Image 1: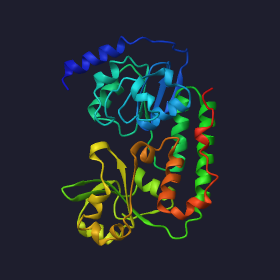
Image 2 (image 1 turned 90 degrees about the vertical axis):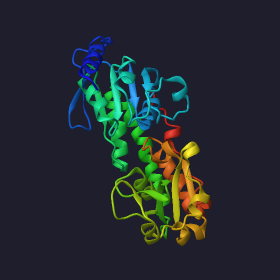
Image 3 (image 1 turned 60 degrees about the horizontal axis):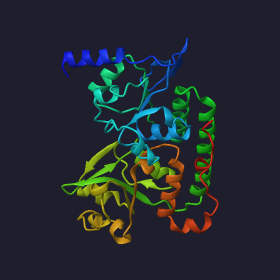
Length: 316
């Protein structure tokens, strides 16, 4: 990015309307371990599907000036709001051109050059921590709610999520023989891109009562055929990605997976990506659905689960 371009963008930021700034503002401590002062949360650019989902659940959709392409829920979001692009391939012009008074972005948004410009702009930028744990999910909701000066609404939504997580723990306790699950993002030239520890996939597998078949690394990495066979997965889990979606036949006929229980069991599960890995309010419901797919015998004994987040009114 040229110096002139950066200066032009910063000039644009200085010309943004101040809106309904308060005398003192609101302070939020974000993922950069910094305090961000928010004076006016009236025009928000929401970057990250979970953040958008939380804002809608809290009744703030009217304040959203733009979203990113991962904001797939509720479905009306992409129809109603300008799209600034994929969260890891943002342009500063796309974000700042919407004249936001606040940018809420999930940790890991980028690229770095864009985030540097946004951070230098005269618009509060809050990076929301992305911690793939039950506590991290609740903390995410509370931080977004606090940024909107809506702590009671966030407490309401957090309570609903905690209720769903408690119901999920009850279901998980019925699992007597955990299955080994390998999350495969894609097959590139025959090599599986598989999820290790410290990933959303790893945690959703655990929440559903499964065991991650990959135990030797963190993050998402390509693995060779020998590693696939050694992992002995019972089930392959993936996400729906349109024309780029991984399909069951590709797994069952793969030379390495053909030597594992996956092919013998014909066990392949694919779920919508944001629902499965987004770690938003519906995560407990997603883990519940995955658990019933992993353990069909549990379905007959699970007639009571009704996600509290779908009925809770936390919008006022």
